[in-house]
Length: 132
Image 1 (cartoon, one colour):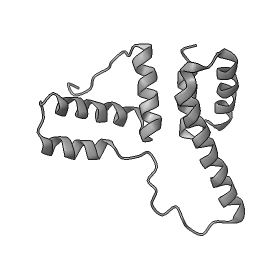
Image 2 (tube, helix red, strand yellow):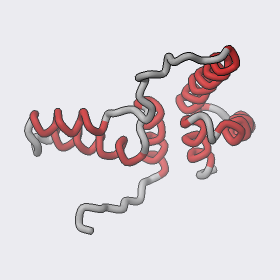
Image 3 (cartoon, helix red, strand yellow):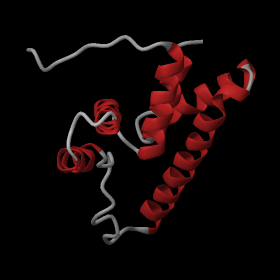
Image 4 (cartoon, one colour):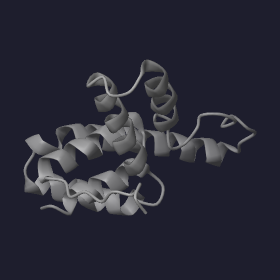
């Protein structure tokens, strides 16, 4: 397939991409395509119309915030609040990853392992941990 490109990222670029994914709540493919679209427009290689179409397409979040407020039990609401808190915590961890030492990172890697199936940012932390 001619339209598929595999790339090898330097650790610094991979780390920055993971932070971008967390910041914009995008999966890896959309984050890369969104950044590529921005770069092509900045370099004036695509028109504003093309940029707007694809920028909108690739900036959609992983989880749409529509129809979330359905009838929920008290336990479901509490669990949702815990997930939101973990998402915020893991976002902060991603922002601070490069300034803390290995013990701090190990603590958060263990926490991310517990939440990897429920919180998308936990997977991003685990991905950062693969390079240490």
